[in-house]
Amino acid sequence: MYARSITIMGDPERLDEGIAYVRDEVMPAITALDGCVGLSMLVDSGNGECIVTSSWETEETMRASDVHLAPMRRRGGEIMGGPPEVAEWEVAVMHRAHVAPAGSCCRVTWMRLNHTDVDRGIAIYRAAMLPEMESIEGFCSASLLVDRKAGRACNTTTYDSREALEASRERSWTIRDAGIRDAGVDVLDVVECDLALAHLRLPELV
Image (cartoon, rainbow, N blue to C red):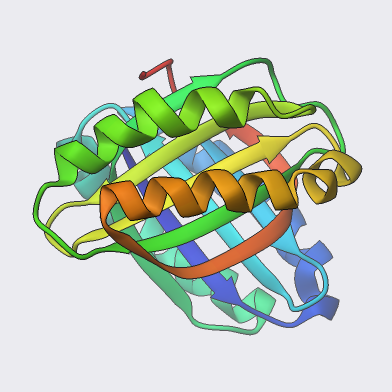
């Protein structure tokens, strides 16, 4: 499985218009394409950041979709007031305890791998970090995306409410600190977002 993420640092006052555009125009178009498994949208109403992620059955179908989606991506940037940044990923891990309800929130951690043993890092995430994250109250799901060529990774953990997300911070930092030491990665950024659209129908990959 593969994923493409589009990150836009936009105008907070334009977020509602951006959500409507992705929901009403982008999502029907993208999910009709060959190989598309679904789409999600995360938003930070405080700073205007949004992350739209589409999932794909194969790398080939993801790449083939770009000719159709590039114009919509540009339009989304115009609506939200910021240039879209594109990243393509391999879906290394996906675990869902239950479907995210309305009001769910996510913590997204961007990482840089400082060694070439990506598979070792994935194994540590799967065997050591994921069980610990799942034990946190309010946990819905977690995914790990990797870009082997660029040496980057992205972990997204979803909780069933803003309160659960906030309550998880200290424990999550402890789990993450232990994991990144063992896996040999550097944390580049951490963002917390509302889950505006939850239609990323990735299968279980653990």
